[in-house]
Image (spheres, helix red, strand yellow):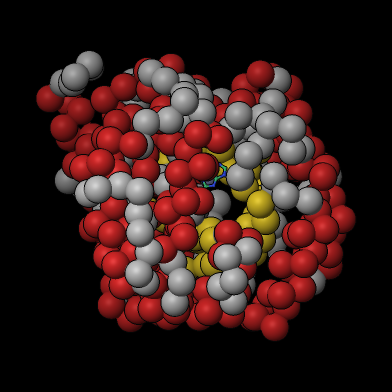
Length: 342
Ligand code: HPA
Ligand code: ZN
C-alpha cells in the first residue's frame, strides 16, 4: 500500500463517521454477485458464470463500454417488483453502514422495458425499497430516471411517455451509458421537455468524453449537476466557471480507476478540483462492480491522495450542498460536519 501513514487511519475514521449523501449511484450497479445468483435462480435464468468467484474474476474492465456490456447483462435477472425492492434494500443496508444519510439514486428504465419489464413494476419496487430505507434507517431519498445515450433521442421520448403516469414518483432525470460519440446536444429536445415538466436534470459528462461535453451539458441541457465531469480539467476556463457557479461534479474515484480514466488513483484530480474551489464530492457509481461503496472510495482516496482533514470535511459538506435536500436540512448536516470530532 502506498502513502499509508498512521495519520491516514485518523482521516479514514473521520471520513467514515461523517454524515454524507450519495448523489451518483446506479441502482443496477449495486447488484452484488450473491444477489445476482439468488435472483437468477428465483427467475429461472441461466447465468454464464459458474459461481460468485467467477463473476468477480470477470470484473476487469478496459474502458466504460467493456463494463457496460457486463452491467447490462447482469441487469437481466431483475424482473419482478420484489427483485427491484431486494436490490434497493441491499444497497441501503450498505449505505447506512457507511453513514450515508441521504441518497439520490439513478435507474435505467430502458434496460428493463426493452426486456418486457413494465416501467411501473420497476418504479414500484425501487420506491418500496426507498420507503423501507427511510422507515428503517431514516435515509431520505430522491429517484432519478436516466436515458441511455447510446440509443436515439426518439427512444428517450418513448420512455419519457411511459414514465408520465409515474411522474410524482420521479424526482429528476439524468443521462448515462456510452459517452463517446453521444454528446449532450443529442438529447436537447427531450431535456427541454423534461425541464418544461418541472423536473431538475443532471447528466454524465466528461467521464470518457471531452471537456466540451461538460460545457454543453451545462449550456444546452441546463443541468443542475454534472455526473463525473473530471475531464473538465482539460479546459482551465471551464474549471474556473464551474468553480464560480459552484456547479457540482459527482466524482466517483474507484469507478474512474477501474474504467481506466485514472488507472492509478494517485493521478486522480479530486484534490486538484477541490483546491480549485469546485463543489466535488465522493460517490460509488456502480459499487458492486468497482470495488466498494462510499467509505471504500474515501479510504482509497485517503491512501492515494494528499487529502487533509479540512478536505475530508469539505467533501462531506459538498455532498449536502449539491443535494436536493431542503436548505434547512443541508445547513443542519453541514454544521454537524464542521463540529464532529473523532
Ligand atoms: N457511466 C456511464 N453510464 C453508466 C455508468 C457510468 O459510470 N454506470 C452505469 N451506467
Ligand atoms: Zn455513473
